[in-house]
Length: 293
Image (cartoon, rainbow, N blue to C red; front, side):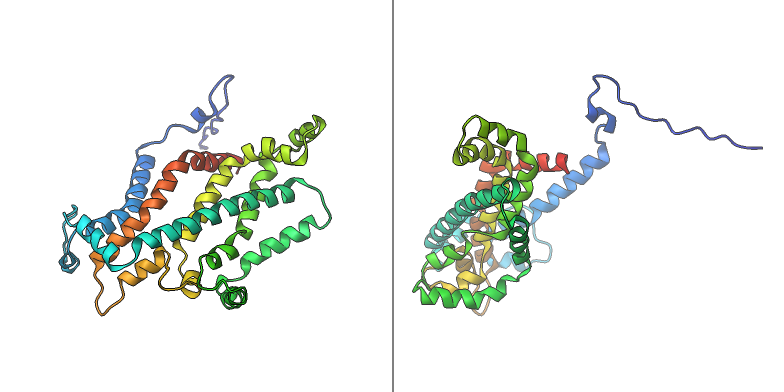
């Protein structure tokens, strides 16, 4: 006796039907995983604020309470008394802003050239740029310090800014995005209308590159903000960036975690502000990349 199994039903798209409705609406499992991911992402920041809002005896408790205390502003005041925090914030903001603007501009220009312009050695040069990503950053510390010392820039903020004005990752990122984001036919139409190279870049390429540029700006600012090794090597200790100031908070025989995490919480606020300002562009860029992928 043979058993006949029904053939699997094929889902056919009806005329005028929304493609998203074929996939189906997310269920409780999807929402549960998203909520767990969000809580897991927020917990380290909340824990830092929790410790920063209490005195140093809080860290010795095995089962600490999960609500904030009332000592955050007192610990924040101690941060500014212990280290030159205002100066460090200003230095990191200056370095991060200049480096971010430069990386986005030059990355977009070079990415557009590699993606859409035809010139001799295009592929070889782009391969060389990508290959530089394989070189560890630590290998370049000593040669860069010797170069900065030769230029009499060691100890100054310009020594932190100058080596990071253009990054291979920025060029690679923008090139990969602009290959599909800007149709070649659109560029040819702009040229037939009499647009110069600069006007074509400004009016056609730059608007299309805005979502990827926003993501690159966030990544670059975060990398510059969190950089510790190169500023530690090249900067004068009296003129630190934010990461060097945080390192000064934990120097000594014992570490006051309430003090250190209060400084860490304050140092996180500019990053959150940047994310809020660029959030719409960042989500737009991620969604476009997901659809194309």
